[in-house]
Length: 507
Ligand code: FES
Image (cartoon, rainbow, N blue to C red):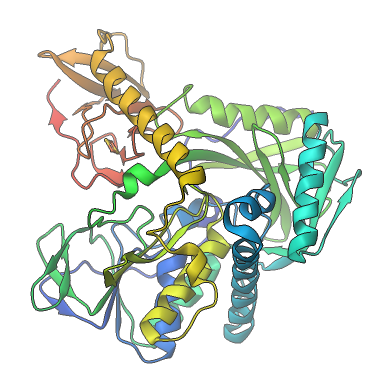
């Protein structure tokens, strides 16, 4: 069995294989009917849908299009979102759970129709989806989930044999799901949007909102982009309007490796019922099959050294498959709401002009697509049958209250832990491509030494609400354990809710 090494630096295969057109940043004042913040699958689907109806749309992207979560997913187009339907029936009733399922199925149909209509070559392939287990105590959980499928009319079946060469005792199949190359798809949508008159701007961070005569997004450079409707599709909503999204969601990071193998890929898309999650699908590069294996998620900024998560996935692949070569590794950040249902809709009941879409719990391809469609429908005045189940202002005593306490107790713990921690590590002992946390003039400071022995030092106090960031060795970033903000080695914001960079410090 080959024991090839993983790539030294993280890079998503999706990202590496597609080149997007580039766009300038916002300069000066812009006026539009709709302003969309975030050019991932949600924002671009909404822009595409609206532009087909001749609505004037501006899309603002903080970085470059394709660099965000959509470019770092496993890109399964499925309504099988782990074991969820039995739980959703308990919390939202049959009607609510059925709406969630139908919304995902409609998203899949929307993607397929769009691919056919625009003749997009994006490696779309229909596959059955499997949740499998090798643990006795998950057998009844899978049976219960199958009963939920039956109640909701989901086409599925139990089996005790899957073709993937992994130990398993049973699996639950959801038929006729799909996979694709997410960025080939998005690139085609961006091109179509551009033809329809949508204006895209990159390197433009939305910092705040202002209400005078009309709502305006204020950019980091102080420019204003006016619109009658604003869509926050920025993963973490760039604007909160006292809705306290950071107290109602928790961030997780998960990891993906891509490899070539001697084994023939057996078809299908797989995910484990138990933790640590292993999520498996195939893709093709120049006609050659590659295996994509994801999982090992954990709360952002918490737990073991992040490179270990990649190593766990590699150990899994090495022990079950005949690996030829590891060709990519990358990671993703995802947000989960208190009841696991995404927030899609008006930011507040009292303000329909600003809308959000967030909390997709790792299932962004279908949730992002349906979110784009729901928000565009709202602007177009078209009734959308699924919108009611996603309303962001909902709050149920069960399970929300319990989860709310859990999320915020964890934040309080990390806020204190970071402040009280003893940190007196020596910078002298740092090896190239290593980081440490130390004290400089009594201030907690994060120091990274790059491959050329250059040191980068930042104040580790997160600019969101003051927790202390931790080093992410797998992706070389400073990650906040409280609400998941991430910062580069020079302190620039990579993920919100923080908007301001970490202070740089002298070493
Ligand atoms: Fe909220 Fe850091 S304190 S993300």
